[in-house]
Length: 497
Image 1: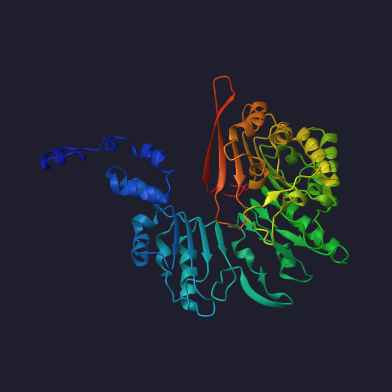
Image 2: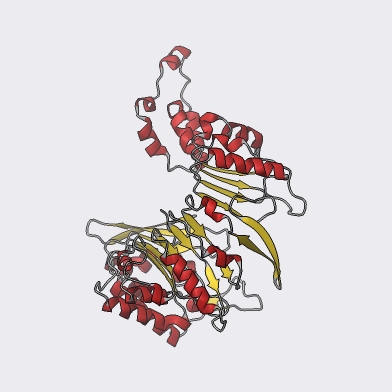
């Protein structure tokens, strides 16, 4: 039974106990809530109304199909709420052939003086005048803008980046002209090329490598694809290496996450690498061969890395062994500071699945067990070598085949300080009984006293959720309970400044 409502006089004298708490404490308490729950708290708790709005509107995602769109835009256009905005994503849905009408007033951003990141998916404008007004407003009022992410479109043209279009055999390809990028060179801190970047002689990429960005912190070049037999391959490697070396402010460097179709890894020009190259480097993503060059040339920052992600496949497993040898022969024998580590073995990412009947997605599919292949044995040997040079790893994210409980312990038991492990779903769930989480993880947890979480990542490009296994230990440190949750997590390896 619900309690009787308070008389009006008592309601007038009632004061929420939260009103006595400082705003900083309320913010620390409620800032971790999801947006929907946070909005409910802001509406219900008047003592948290002003401070709560600063968290509620710090990250904004708007779409032309959002409910109450005009009211939301009007609220964000006020001086009081606009000052809270830090990151904004504007999403325009609809056909590119028949673009949606202008749904976002371009002058609203004039009050977003603290805006740091802006993402444009689609075009919120239909006229060049609106685009020009939007650009001028950003330049004038949003002086703290650090990251601007958008896709090529005739209506999206920003200073220093002029968009053009080229015809290709596989459809239309986009190229960017960086000819006037020096206008914003001092403002850029993050540069990212997503996916594969095909290099052609005389292309805009050549112009890009001649520019300088004094405050560059993060450089992700994507998978740079050049043909090893091309007469211009060495020129490309030299120009890109020179560009990297001359930016000694880089803290995160990514040279690709996949092998190009021609099977060529981009490698650096070793002649340009010296001991004082990239002194602030703390995060690296790429192939083992590049790290081998850095270690062989005595790059001191390599041994101060805190995050490392390597891509290893059947064709470059020897590079892993060479990397380990180069590190052990250097004055600093181990990469003892690496805390976040990721490695991927793509040749064994999918277990062998056989299904009864014609359809592979049949409900009675079962796993076929086989003896380890020579490739798998080589990869196990590589893992053993890697563990010897990364003794302080705390977070491990990798791609492995399906593992039984004992194999899981043998693979990760070499890292005594592990706290978190992230692997694909099939690595764990293929051999795990429906209610046998405790028996499955007991050997692993028993060998790693600091381990508290294992993540089974969802299949890529699906709407499934990641499965998180949290371990509860008794006073003696033994596993007593496994808590299983389904949540949505970010990428397994990501660098944040």
